[in-house]
Image (tube, rainbow over the protein chains, first blue to last red):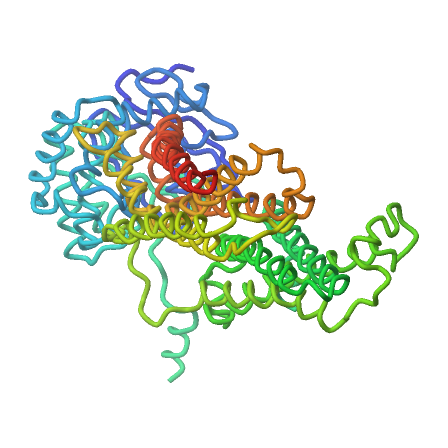
Length: 242
Length: 383
C-alpha cells in the first residue's frame, strides 16, 4: 500500500518489541508537511520508540515507515544513517553535546560531517546561535553553560542543516518551566519560519498546546485522549467517611 | 567475598585482562624466586644477587602500572547509582578494586611458586621435573619465609597502588569536558632526559668500557648508567602528556573538518591519560633498542640469559598493555558522546578515521623520539 502524497512521514501498523515488552503495538500515523505534531502520553507509553522507528534509528519488527513516498523500513543501516544525517534532525532530553568542542563547533558539527567548508559551517552555526539568543555562548565549552543554554545549542545543531523533519524527544524534560517554555517557543518559531516538520514527544499538555495536532499514545497504542491522572487511591473514600 | 562473587559474572574480556595481570604477576614472582635461588646457591656473590634483585624492580614496576590500569577500566569498580543507593559507595568500590587486584596478583604469585618448586624438582609428576635443578640450587632448602616475602611484594604493592589510584576524592570530580590545562611536564621531561643522558655518558666513561652489564655477565659499576637510564625514562614519561597535547593541537589547527576537529580536540583532552603510558612505552623501547645495539653488536649471547629475556618481555608486554588499557579507558569514558554523535548521523567511518588519525599523529612524533633517545643512550656506551 502506497502512502498518501501529502504526508511527509507515514507509518502503518508498527509493532515493536523492546526488552521483552511490546513498546509499540499497531501504531499508524501520518505527518503532514510543515506541521508541528505532538506525540503525548505518560512515561513508558512508547513515544521515544515511535520517534526512533520513524527516524530510522530502530526498525520495527512489523509495519512500514515511508518518508516522502520512499520506504524507510527496507533501507540498510548505512542508508538510514545517511537519511538521518541529510534529512532529519534529532533533539534529546539531554543535550548530548561533544564536551571537547565549543558552542559553535558543536552547532556546526552536522555541517562539518556533511563536508561543508569550515568557514561556511561556522557562519551558519553562529547565525543560528544568534537567532536562538545564545550568540554569547559560541566560544564557550558545554560545561561552562547552563542546562538551557546547552539545550538551545542542541536545537541549533539540529536546525543548522534545515532538516525536512525534526524529531524532538522531550526537549524540555530537564529544564525548569520558564526555561523550558522559552526553549520550546524558540524551537517552534524557528521551525515554522523555515517550514520544518516537527515531531514533538512530550508528556506535558502545556507543551502539546503549541502543536498543530496531537497524537496520544498509551501502552504502545494510539488512543483518542490520554485519561487524566486520578488522585491517590482511597483518598475520596476517606474524606467521605469523616 | 563480594570481589570474588563479582568475578563470576564478569565479561570474558574483563576476565582476560585480569588473567593477563595474573600472568604478569607470575612472571615477576618467578624472576624474584630465581633471584632468591641464585642468592641461596651463591652466598659468596652477594653484590651480584643484589644487582639481580635490582633488575627485578623494573618488571615489578611495569606490572604494578598494568594492574592499576586494569583496575581503572574494571566495570565492577565504576560507581553505579543503584549500588551506591544500597550502600556500595565509592569507598567500598575502592576496597573491591584493591581486593580484586590483590586476588589476581596472588593467583599469579602462587602459580610462580608452584612452577618454581616444580622446576627445582620438589613437586614431581609432571614433565620437566627438576629441569633446572642445578640452576635453582635444588641441593639447598628453599628459605620459605624469604620466598613468601618476595612473593607478597607484588600483591601488596599492586593493591595499594590500585587503592590509591581509585580512592574517593574529597573534592567533587570536575564535570566532563572541562577545559584541561596544558600539561606542564614537557620542560621538566626534556630536562630530565638531558640530565639522564649526561649522567649515563659520564658514568660509562668511568667504567671499564664493557658497557652496561646485564644480570647474565656483570662487570664494573653499572649504578650510574642505570640511574641515568632511569632518569631518561622518567623524563620521557613526564614529557609524554605535553607531546600528546601538542600533537592534538597541531591536528585541529587551521580550519579543521569534522574528522580533524574531533581527533585533535579529543587528543588534547586525553593527553594526560594517553601521554604518560605512551612516554613509558617509548622509554622502554628506547632502552631495548639501545641494549640491542650494545649487546647485539658483539654477539652478547652470554649477556642475554633466558631470565633477562623473560624480564624484558614482561616489561615490554606490561607497558604496551598499559597503553592499550589506557586507550580503552579513554574510549569507555567517551562512550555516551559517541552514542550522541551516532544519533545525529555521524558515520562510524568518521569516528574510526579520527581514532586512526590520533594514532598516526602519536606514532609520527614518538617513533623518531624513541629512536633518537636510543641512539643517544647507546652512543657513549659503545665508545
